[in-house]
Length: 590
Image 1 (cartoon, rainbow, N blue to C red):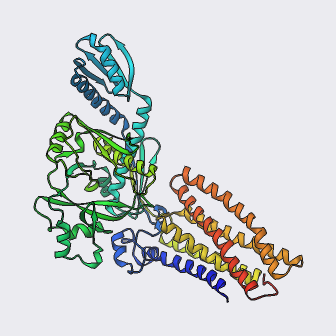
Image 2 (cartoon, rainbow, N blue to C red; image 1 turned 90 degrees about the vertical axis):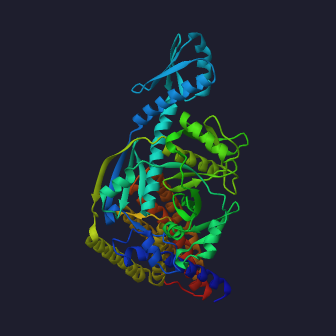
């Protein structure tokens, strides 16, 4: 075997071994751990061998395969709009009086979402109307009668607010559930004002209701920059245990503790900090999956909480004159005074924005900020695209508004779901799948002889690649997902049948073994490619438009089709070509 063939076979062996290695967390999660431990990432991390991939790369089972909790949360956008209109009325009246445009009073009609401004001197209303409509663009003119101005929220802004209210609630709910350690949680929008939550493997609906239904807590807390070496000294004087994976990193010149395990980091830092200080973590987001944290970093914060999200009136992402994303925030009158005092006394220090005990960002205060309005600059792009950069600003705005304007959320439906299949049926289904696969393998080996055996090897590798791909994306396997898995295996068999029949056809025309193999693969390529691409398009449409089980089916189908293309076109061709070209065979066993 020359070097070229060693390289090709080495690639196939490397892919196979890498695929098996990547499935180790899935094997431990579904086979080694019992049902009670299956959904606990911390337990899985402890049980995995040191050489195994991270625990987050695993295949999860859906509600229909292991049971769990199903919840539907209703977001009361109507009440949120009513409260927003009332707050806006107070802000507009304060703005007009501060500008000395005249003296006005504001009355709101929550049911009709109308805001009525009444000027003490009707002669000032022209100037007030012009300034208010130019400044508060989210409101439009309903009617004008002398010294009375009736405003209503802009319809586009109302629809945007409704969508954002649901997005804010989803963000808070996901953050809360992530702290519970349920990696395969499915949180998605249902209709226009509801959120569907699936918690596979959980069995306490009341605990889930308490966890999800609690109002989020947004805090503005000062970072303790007076002792920048506190974490470095802690790390040197009390080295952390190796299993905690705690390391020392630097951010803008400040040493921080970092670990993929948040609980281990907090346990290590407990009782080691100066009096009056708290250690709070920040999530270092996975660049591939934004909802995952590849690590957590420590911040030393003052225990005192000078300002909370209750004082925040609004937050919006925008693009500055320098074409850089920024987040503009506004406080209510009481919050404005507190924020001005806080920034005046803390110029040069960092202020952490904390949601549910997680630091989202910690911008530096450059100057005293008055007027109740502030701007958070997002820094430099550091290799990110502008869209990703702007997306971070929009996410921060959502985080801020999630604490500032939480729309009331109620539990519309909550129930414990038993596994549709159950353990016994899962075993029977698995046995049926194995028997079916064995029959296909035997048939291919008998009907196509050595070429059939090569197809069987590709088919087994195809199945492993599908499972590894689903594990990489941390997918949740459901009953429709299993159907997608079986379907893609069938497509993979069909591709190999097509190739072998093409080779037989070329041999029947009197072609040599080499020519038959080469032309058989070449002529079958575009047929296989077209069939896979058209099915992939259908899979992507299902993925982006479907929900729940449909999306699970689409995910499995897409991953399986890509694996099938690789195994049928690359793997089988390398092996078949080696036996014919590499060994100068005069015939093909097909």
